[in-house]
Image (cartoon, rainbow, N blue to C red):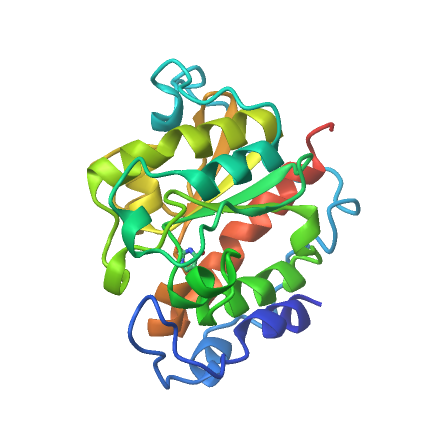
Length: 261
Ligand code: URA
């Protein structure tokens, strides 16, 4: 079962990611050769079928606020839809001048699990939906491997408008947009937030954090368990990292299955 689920996620995507130049041609053989097929690890299959697995240890920084929550809320909108409408009208930073569509995020208002990326790329900017380019197709495979649908989770971004030429969002753009994400998190009240990549990690947890050091290790901020992992675009560049992301997602599934709703 482990291999079957992992293969769903590790089959090479067909297209180049538009936010992050290249899809490498390294094949899934590299990844699969790194697997221990004799492993007897029990792998969670769904959010409901894992019992008695390991909780992350409680941490000393349980009450530390996330960077998204350090200021008094500047957004008090009552629903995710209201936030999406406000994002569509927003002109709080220069990104509004170059965007086609805003990308407020999508998914369940009751999601126990949210994924947060950096910001929209070309496809997302054209469609107004998060993670619909090559990186998004890989994220879809990851969700499928976790036996989750997009509608089971919420998928958002630190900035809701595409930075021109897919450059990193600037600090003033992140700051201007953060109240929307902060309010989305506040309304959804997820148990777990998966942070996708270094930019989101630095915006949400620690401005100096490094994703290679932080990934796979639980952090708790503002009462939410956070699992940083590699951005799907990084996996397009280096598919051998997919196994690490899968290990991180197993921890997420273990946690959700051992935490009362
Ligand atoms: N990369 C991101 O960080 N977010 C998206 O929505 C798409 C690509």
